[in-house]
Length: 462
Ligand code: NAD
Ligand code: UGA
Image (cartoon, rainbow, N blue to C red; front, side, top):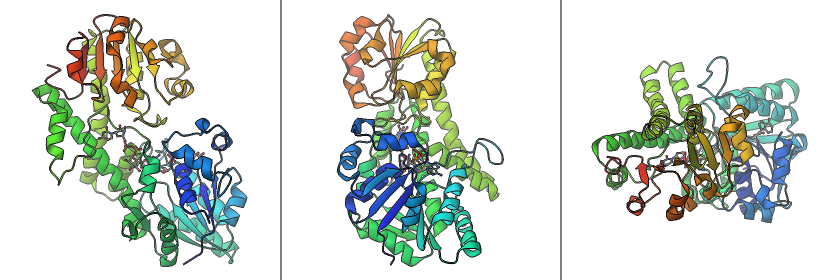
């Protein structure tokens, strides 16, 4: 086994930051540098005010408070951090390619390649390079080629092992997921390097949860896990439409189906469609890979999961327009939640984006509230042109003043228990509540004379 005394993590994002914070907590003897090219992000990670960390995750600020400045450092000093590291994690963004071959489908690997080049140039001695980012299958081959070519050609004194160690954390529960993972996957060829990484995790993860595989199985398993999770959401969302059409209730159907232990109850919650930076990207990667290997039917199959997801957002928007008499001009709609799920400030691929853009396009004025997403972030997404068609409110009750409708898009806990009696005095009539997260109890609304529409509630929506 190699002795790991110093770790460098390239990429101080939603994965790099929390993952390294947890390693720092459980491995006080390991010195960890988290590096990023984004100076602003690093400044935020170093902010004295823990409310200003660049990402919001329950439990994260406590760990940062205890370990930052001890064995956990956030820095832009890439060169020194790589030079001294025994192990380098690549945890950079891998978004969908915007142009060229594979545009709109495969991942843009420019940031990963740039990391590999930097590591190959700067590293000294033996360095274990760990893929933490989610990558198309066989990316480890590219990384190896970059690392070993430079090694062969220029400097015989450095050597590398490449491992795949995909991350399965979900935003909003990242710290808990990292501290209590269902499994830790280590893919590789060099047993000594694999055991070294395993040794780190053994500080807090039970041995039977640490799985060794070959590199390609590890890379593919990550894409596959996300695809399977997303597939469940598209499955339940497709059935939600059928519930509305037939008078069934999706929560009752999901409960009945999920009680079958072979199916299980998790990830059967209907909603406005899955968001987040990864599900769509990872499925599209799977689709691209399948087509690349001539497996058209496999590609078509997975593509449908994304198609249903887009359709779910579209049909919610259409339902809102329909219920508001086909016209949104001069109508005010309160939007509760802009994050792609509760307990995060992340808006990447949030269903709120498409739904809000469509409502604005239809002529509505939106009054948007979220507990963690900032006005600045929303502004970047909805663009300046539409500034006159939306506002950001800090007091969520403000959003209801003279509103024609409210759309609940994120399931923040505090939206579950609003004072609807008070709200009903502020709004216009008729007033519609579109609960896309099924967080409200329909019984409460019967006396208030507020119209409630809930996804998949065929009985109520009759
Ligand atoms: P992110 O965009 O939040 O963070 C990536 C960071 O890498 C950015 O701050 C960026 O500035 C930095 N970076 C890019 N190139 C760099 C370079 N050459 N040198 C230094 N820094 C560089 O992304 P993320 O959400 O943390 O995701 C990272 C990877 O992890 C992706 O592949 C993603 O698919 C995967 N993943 C994400 C999640 C999640 O919940 N967000 C979960 C599991 C896996
Ligand atoms: C997801 C996976 O759960 C993680 O295991 C994975 O590591 C991560 O993607 C990744 O690779 O990025 P995340 O996107 O953070 O995590 O959050 P999820 O809890 O999976 O939710 C994704 C989306 O699906 C959200 O928009 C959520 O509201 C939606 N969702 C989730 C539903 O609509 N219904 C459900 O039952 C569950």
